[in-house]
Image (cartoon, rainbow, N blue to C red; front, side):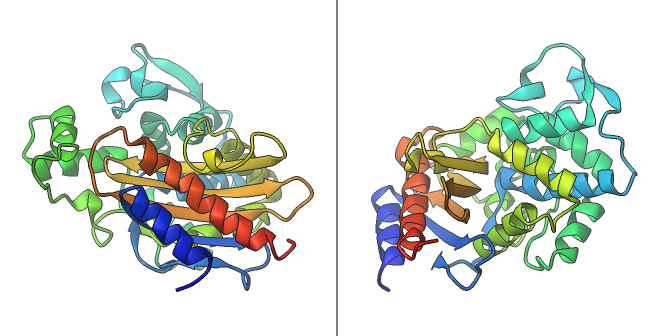
Length: 297
């Protein structure tokens, strides 16, 4: 093991995490940086990217009007720290604005509403059509929360997360198991990003919409933190579940070919706030992109 892979593994270990990575210039799959890129990994909220692709395809098929409005009631919302999940009153918005919130702030409530409309079968059919045979979505965030409550024998979701983020006892949960949870590989996620950026995932208009949403993601503490604040754009989607911290995205320096990067990690500790475990995703992405850029993208 030499070169960037060794440096990435060392960075992950120094941050108290283990992980996998795949990076490739868009349109140039023969050039890559990889760290166990075909190892199955839990997606967490990265599942919202395949969901977005399926949503876009449903719009293309004329089966969903993205401007149609619906009202989401607080009693029916999935819990979460952002978006509709924290609002107290009924909210009326369009389907495409629900998709915006689902990606830009990783809104759990919006994502579960969209998933109910799109359906799991369509999400997995889109993955099959794109040749992503090792990526499967088994449910939404509400399904994950129900499994956590059952696996921790907790009375509610809040108690389940307290058990999951405690370092006093090891908790075995299905949500950490890539066989039982929604899962993918780092390589398949860069392939999905390549399909979105090349207008193969859906129509050009809908792929442009997806790229705009990924570019509007609010979170800057993971992949974005590894790159200069000017002269480079990062579009991506994070995924978080206690010790699991992920991000898949596209990094583009001005005047250069974009690079798709997928980083999936699991920290040794379970605290909700682990700044080094977040920052190492940006560090790993920077190491991978720097190596690819050295070949003059």
